Image (cartoon, rainbow, N blue to C red; front, side, top):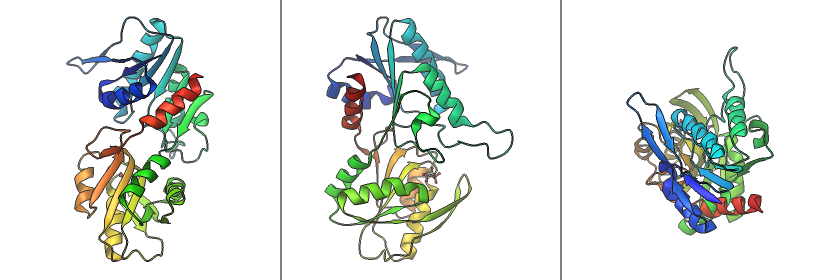
Length: 292
Ligand code: R5P
């Protein structure tokens, strides 16, 4: 087995390779002036190649992933595994208006055509229950970072309320809270636009204990900022946030801090200074299980 790492996921892939005790090669990328990509792999590959890259900022990354996968097959890889802790295009699972592309199905099919296995972490599945419905291959594997996040929080806090900012977050927040014996509450959210959300907190006494807002994705940061504002209005100013996939588009990170969140932590699904919760052990165990 060999790990092939895109440069934007290199440090995480190095930790994964060390855990698996397998060789790693960095994929060489060149961007031409017109923004086309050149992708270069090692000229000789083993039978099983694990390609690692989170698919945030996906439009260029997906093209490069396609060039990589097709080339890896041409160079002799018989089994191609994709490790993409963040999977993009999973949110649009229906056409909300006639004529809209259902990107989850289309991108899912592309990945299924290119790879034998796809491993990801807490994908944002809304109306479907299993990742194989989005990526139609047997080994479309959805892992969860709930244990890693729970263990991290247990080290930081003796007790706290975990707050999920919308109904979809209940699956992660309840699992983490039950694992570590913390209380949790789930807010109701309505998205009015890309950067505008309305929210109502669950009725609960939020005072006198730290509150940790937990979400799978922070994109514009408006969801977490709105939750922080409501918590302050409810008498709490000891507020933290944990995010699985820190997309942090534009001013998101600063916006969350300005909203009164004291500290933001994320997993290393995406490289960022806040990424202190490492996923290599989770990913390594999953790779070992499928490679048996
Ligand atoms: C959506 O339901 C997700 O769970 C997140 O709450 C959402 O993607 C966060 O987006 P933003 O940071 O732009 O508010």
